[in-house]
Amino acid sequence: DTGVSQNPRHKITKRGQNVTFRCDPISEHNRLYWYRQTLGQGPEFLTYFQNEAQLEKSRLLSDRFSAERPKGSFSTLEIQRTEQGDSAMYLCASTFVSGSYEQYFGPGTRLTVT
Amino acid sequence: SQQGEEDPQALSIQEGENATMNCSYKTSINNLQWYRQNSGRGLVHLILIRSNEREKHSGRLRVTLDTSKKSSSLLITASRAADTASYFCATRSGGGADGLTFGKGTHLIIQP
Image (cartoon, rainbow over all chains, first blue to last red; front, top):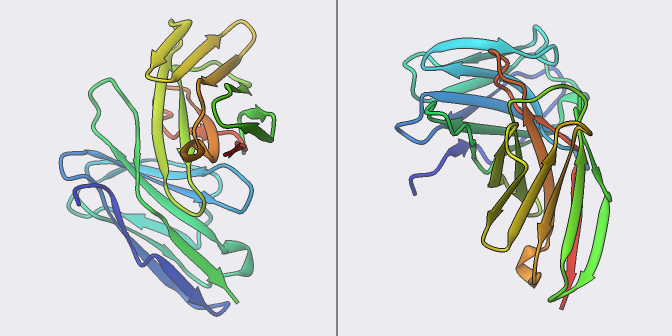
């Protein structure tokens, strides 16, 4: 499968614990995005990278959230000191900047904070 | 925050009928995209329309864009049971702001 992959697909954690998610984009794509989606809502943009540079962060990305893309390939999203309000689907998407800008989404990681 | 609003929030039609969904947005855009999401899964890109385009077709999909009214519509013709999903419009503002801004979606149910 050459699409965007995300791991794990599901994560249950207790409040206060740290969690880390991984996203592997389509190999030739140089832009990678993170979104969060809660039940009944559309995805909300968190941050994006072009190669290894983090170019934009939304105000939703509190200081408990950090994202990296160290070699310009896979990316990780870490949430420290999780809160119940962090429960959501975390979606990763990638694209190749050539003028099209359509984004290819992974299946998401569903986080449940108990 | 959500930029756009899809209308209706939910739509149920018979297989073979046409389905129309509308999207309104608030700020100027570079392009508008429509995505489909099956229950609990990732999003699939359907079609992109640029701000200087008024209408675009792709298979059974037809998208219109009216930038003066800040609105778009998605028409799915000859609907099939497999079209049952949530449909989202998403806007890209451009100018360095590259993250997509999604609406809340329209949940479409096709009755066999």
